[in-house]
Image 1 (cartoon, rainbow, N blue to C red):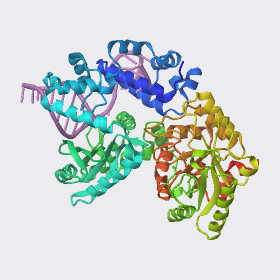
Image 2 (image 1 turned 90 degrees about the vertical axis):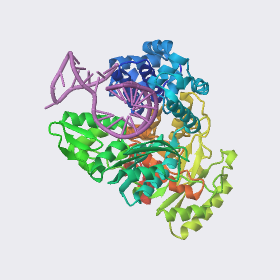
Image 3 (image 1 turned 120 degrees about the horizontal axis):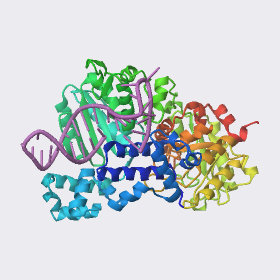
Length: 577
DNA sequence: GCCGTTTTCGGCCCGACTGTTTTCAGTCG
């Protein structure tokens, strides 16, 4: 049997939910599958462990039935209801729902009436005019679906946070500068710092909504207006990203910001809690159900306070424990960009970097850092000119000269390559001469779980390996993570005092938020580095911090949130035990 | 299908916009 991890189980549950919806199942039945999928994806323990220990129902939203279904997937790759559904409906129908403008009802009609089972089929049916002729469809609907297919084909993939956030900030700044705007901020998944986003939400406060809507429709980056009403405009932009602009009255700002920041799961839970308190939460405020009186609306803090809660930082709003924590008043003090005192991962022209030691040091100074770990590739990674001992001696000599000049301290460091056996590039007497050693996997993407895991565990047993770099090796939108037993990896990291890295490079952000929470639960330390291959890329730290915050990371557990002497003392090699 | 400081049954968040309709269903967030 192939192995299933949490995201794989979540994907099957999501597909089941979509098929149930297309099949016309009870709304709350298919929603329960989506809800469970979301919870499984975010759950910090491995699904296999939970199944073995018969603790699947620990996951909120997973009851007896779903626990049995998940166990069945783990055992044989499917479950009874899923088999029945896929016998009735082709699973490819789920892809139709990915096309903007096509939901479950239209997908069902297209399948029943025209035999459409794929986006290709749909395109052909549109070309033959069959779609517009369907009852309840018409020309405009057909045209809308055709535009949706282009959007799906061209920009189907989610955008990286590093692409979306600057655009969101630009749009917000543009709208904020309008005379009729009181304030404007990015909301939605961008504000929550998600590693990838599907679209951009920008919220505007204004007493002149129509002026804001007009401005939104005519933003310089707009290529198509998808929809535009009195308070909401959706546009497609030159970057291919959809931007949704919502406008509210200034005194509704806090409620609207809370609402449009989401996540959907967080908001559903917030509204359930409100209901239990005799309150109703909408994007316009918190209202008493009995009198209709508005209790809060102008700030987010007021909205959460009306519900008896601290205000959860946006990055935590995934209904993954933050609501309980906010209610108990025990939200963590999350790490911020200002806490970062240095960058622990960068490359130079000595290997595959584009910038010199000097340029990297200058950038570190510009960012106000106390230190910068120079971590070029070690000997084993031949294809990028991994360093031999002579190269290292040369680099160390230059580092000594640069450090003598003052400014940020350059640390003599390395990114070791973990080989097929879990060994690294140099003998101990060389490893001992570095200030810091990162060790990373650069091969073995298709390896079985046991192989990749044992390589990492073996590397962490090396007393000179201080940090594991980009632990899962994923490249967002391009390469799946290496199949690893992350519970074992996190446990070994904690046991050996090896830090796990957040590689802040925008298409890595590895560890992920979910794995970070797993690491913290085991008591492992976190290290943050940009993996910059060009000095300007050291600005990527903010995306690493977003990911860290989503993983509930605090400055205390983060190596490079500590001053230099303390940071060094926390390294495995310097532990005195 | 899940869940319980009102409940083991009967609830389950709330609203905007569009298009095809003559009063509302579908989609989206």
